[in-house]
Image (cartoon, rainbow, N blue to C red):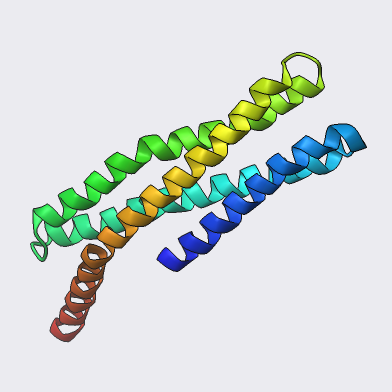
Length: 166
C-alpha cells in the first residue's frame, strides 16, 4: 500500500502541477478546454487517492479493533491506529475540499464572475495541501504497517484455530 500511495501521490501531484502550468498558457492560445478537462481529471484522481488512504485507515482500524476485542492484541495498538486517523482526517477533508473548489472557481472566472487570481491562489494552495497530506499519510502508513501486520497474523492464527477446533 505504501508503494501504491507513493506512486499515486506523485502522479496526482504531477498531474495537478501540469494542470496549473497549462492554465498559464491557455489564455494566450485559446486552449481552455484542455486545461478544464485535465484539471477535472487530475482533481478527481487526487481525490480518489485521498479517499483510498482514508479507507485504508478505516479498514485497518476495524481489523485491529476486532483483534483487540478478541483479546489477541493490546488496546494501545488500536488507540495508535485511531490516532493516525484522527490526525489525518482533517487534512484529507481539507485537501478534498480545495481540490473540489478549485475547478469551481475556474468556472466562475471563465463565466466572468470571479477574478483569475482566486482560481490561481486556490490551485497553488491545493497542490501544497495535497503534497503535505500525502506526505503526512505516508508517514502514518509506515508507522501503522507493523500494527496492521500483527493484526493480520493474529487474524490468520485465529482462523486457523477455528478450523482445527471445528
